[in-house]
Amino acid sequence: MKHAIVLFAVTAAVLMVVHAAFGYAAAYTLAYGTVVAMAASISATFFWLWYQRQTPLALGMGFSWLGTTGVLGWWWLYQILERPVAMAENSGLFVFVSAYFVGAVLHFRVVGRSLGWGSLVLLLPFSGVLALTVLRFST
Image 1: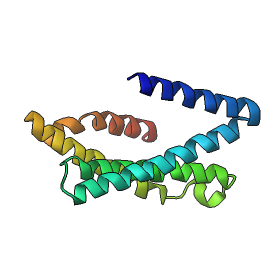
Image 2 (image 1 turned 180 degrees about the vertical axis):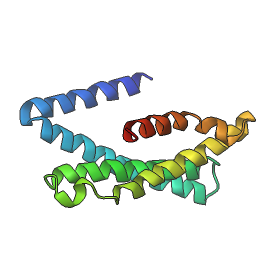
Image 3 (image 1 turned 60 degrees about the vertical axis):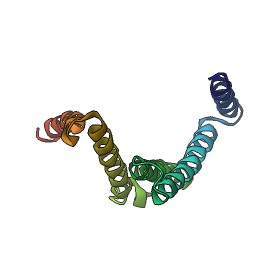
């Protein structure tokens, strides 16, 4: 735990120094680019673990981290490329959101099974998101 706290403090300090020295855009670009690279590595690791049949959660985690890679990578590139119009409201982003969704559903199925619950119980929070979205766009 001590190492994790030190790593957290050092990382936060480095990003704050980059922000102070080079501005928000530089710190944002560094932070998001690093997260995208880590997420891609983590996703690949989980897909490898799934392939090796090491854990039942691996496929869900692989898809979840693939979604992280894609969504954050999209926004990172959007900033790097200076907000191109072609990316502003492009439905291609939803491919990566779908990977997130698949990962969550697969993960919830394993967790639900281990708890003796049905898979749908763990999806109940999404009904709130659906309700708020319908309310927002139906008026």
